[in-house]
Image (cartoon, rainbow, N blue to C red; front, side, top):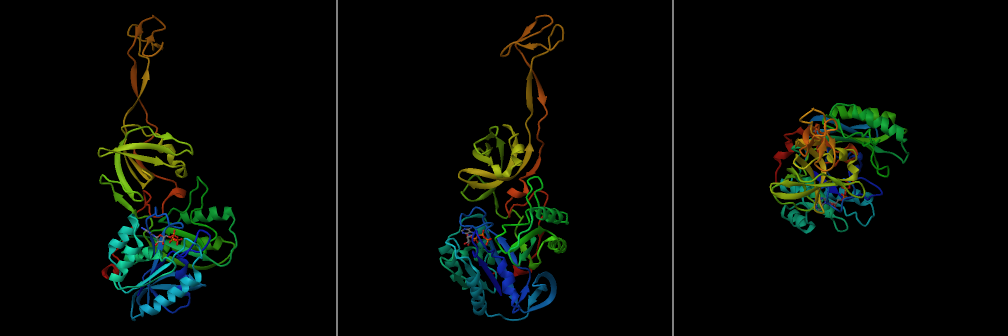
Length: 437
Ligand code: ATP
């Protein structure tokens, strides 16, 4: 039986993923497959942080089992399949009680829980990861599918839960999340040391931003999450988690491995001539203007993309990425990836495909004595040796200070869903994919 849930936290506390360990803690069910952490459209205004929904499959485990974490020191395993028939009503009631006990009483927190013995049509995920989805439509769809669900307050979390229930995990990465016991602080130096250590494990990504001194594996201290290490190799993540946990000034209560759509670029659509607000695009074009800074050190430019002018920007949080962006010149050919918000593409990463030649104007060489002439005003040159005059300058090609290539924004500015250049998610033939509604 699949259970998905979303929208349980506020900016001040909680994390929806935490409910996985709480649900499994009682030992009533086995995990079938790995828990899924499914990130959705990063531009949705209702999101608390990373717009993540969660799905687990529970049952009576049988077949091959794989280590997928620990709860209160006890290992938990993910089983290949379930040998029993679970009661969806009972599971819904149990998850409802858990959510009701833990969700944050905040005006923007509206939990939703969905239970189903099949995965929903994939289009529901595709819509929720790229567009803005309507709650009434989602509820209609849930009724049509005959699924069991429950919303709390306005029940907006049903959008995320339904999307998680339709994710197939065709391309995945993993995240191992460690949860805390108590509220003890971790010194900043320890955080940096741990993040750098995690970064050293094969296949991990987005662990640390050394230049900006940002230990990305440590999120907001007010949530039950102590750290989250991302990667494409499960075994290495377990090792990394052990090393990080050993350095902390308190023991970890639990750690769980999720399969996720983080780092897959699933939110990105190919540009086909139209741009819609809150969507994210991959869009190629010729640079039309030299990027200019505005107040707040955001850099703006525009490109000609198939005959249409598209405004693009590298905002201040993209830090050193702006020093690459601002070197673009009219005529350069680039591909940018970014969210379309308020009429502008907010760049998440960029490929410089072709650079135009940049020329420098110099006074010409004297045609009589061969000396470099002196500048005497606009297009007026004179030889200081023989007095010869000319109005025709010399142009030489300047070395461009940027190279064609792929440029990521720094780790601290990356979207969860964005695939950093150089990272390849795992392509998975997920067995769950066969269970299509
Ligand atoms: P956390 O991941 O820490 O739980 P969050 O950043 O995921 O927090 P939520 O509290 O889950 O944020 O809030 C996001 C809300 O937006 C949820 O109610 C979810 O159902 C809804 N939502 C998600 N994707 C979409 C979408 N594409 N269109 C409309 N609503 C969406």
